[in-house]
View 1: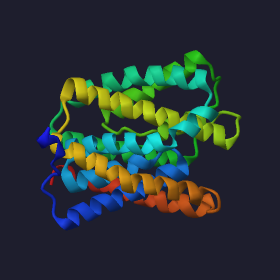
View 2: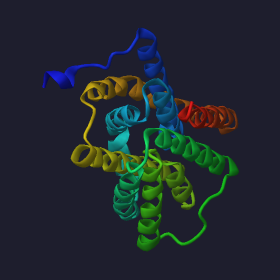
View 3: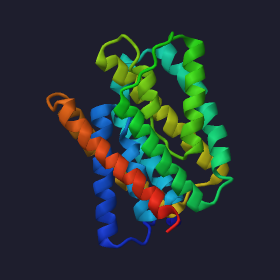
View 4: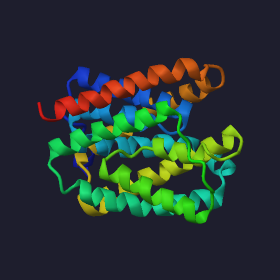
Length: 253
């Protein structure tokens, strides 16, 4: 039990930067509803490496997401979310299985590639325009979950593209996405807990990082009420592309 209460051996600067990344990821997730881990993961990887970063993202993300989950559940479309989430859960497990067959440097590189591709898709503005039903929801969930696991990125930019195609109020769409984010994090958590195992020294760090992440979530939700997307999104995209490129560059250097 004592081992679980140990923080990793960080310098003050590393700890400060980790808090800053957690806050920034919270702001993006609070504003967009789904893209926070695209900032969290590469930022953490550059500070502590890919596998510890995944540990911290999963723990801090789950705690932070639980704060906004009650309101999301009230507004979400239950059948669509459950069918999408069920498929996603299976896809994540399969993707993570293939991910852990690789070397650490490969994992870092593929994380960077995923972040760049996902960001470019967001920039393009593409949305799914086909039918929305249990079959398509489960199918998309499985595919998106597989890619999230395969590239080691527990986030929902592709999830956003699916749900943004719904002809519903923005608040309902955002609630759907927020529920799927917690599905994704639980899928990653259960895989690590039952199969790969958690790094005990990063367990407490994940809990600590949930504090700046939660603050960032609230700030992001507040900014959503008055800050125009044309200002917020370009800044976010530039940051994400830069971090994705940094992961690719640093993977083999």
